[in-house]
Image (tube, rainbow, N blue to C red; front, side):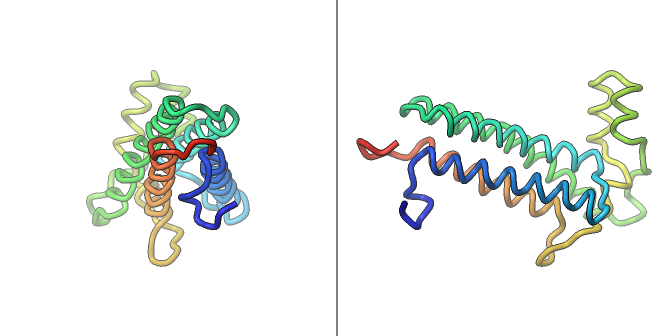
Length: 172
């Protein structure tokens, strides 16, 4: 296999995307259960975006489609990635607010889903709360939502590259 992932086959690139999604979700669980960083509602939605991307990467990896199918799988990865970008951007915006402008902490996600219709619960989640404004984890000066934003863009770029580039005959 070539060293440059941009020259790998579609299946190898989608395998790399799947591995990245699994590693990111694994780290999120590690941060939650070993570092005791409880996820806020926006963090949970960001995880769901990685799950959606991972499932699309897995489907493309297992299927190994032709040219048209590769484009379809790239779009299937791109959709949850765009949703993840939107959630991460909202999360970063909440973290950037001055303390006096941060919304009050709301109920937990499970309570909102149990007590309210889904549309109302989603509206409450995206209005944000004080717990979403907390930045308890940093790496190289970026908070976790900033890193998820970087990963959404990178993995979406990988999927679009894999799906829309011209493939040489005989290379899947």
